[in-house]
Length: 168
Image 1: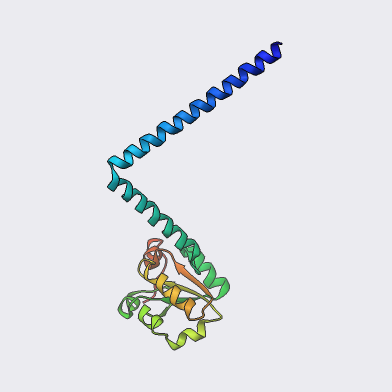
Image 2: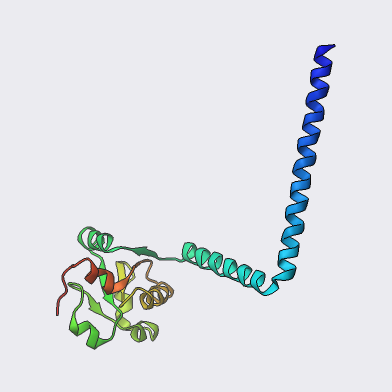
């Protein structure tokens, strides 16, 4: 008999917790609907920011090349005989570049420079000033048939920031 009373009391307690949880959910959803109704533009802006952030993350994960840092660049050059391509202008290249880097501006890569054919079986690392233009270079190199492509995150600025040597 006591067991039945205890189990009955427990069942009533469970029902109360479920009802409380349901009512909290309903209250929260009604407050959310009210907020969205009162602040439509703010809500749309928030959704747009979330969408843009998710698309950037997905784009980063789905790219065919990898972003590397300066120490990884050094390892790839020393152990994999990687070819380093500077996508900056010739003037910027002449003012200072990474040792053994080849100057191949983005315009040359886009136009289909003949020397790209020599890179198809090699590990290639591209860099620019900040690492953004060289991402485009990586995409064009991959389209041209170069399979093992890397981008230096932060470009030459990260190289200089770590006080690594430049050649003029």
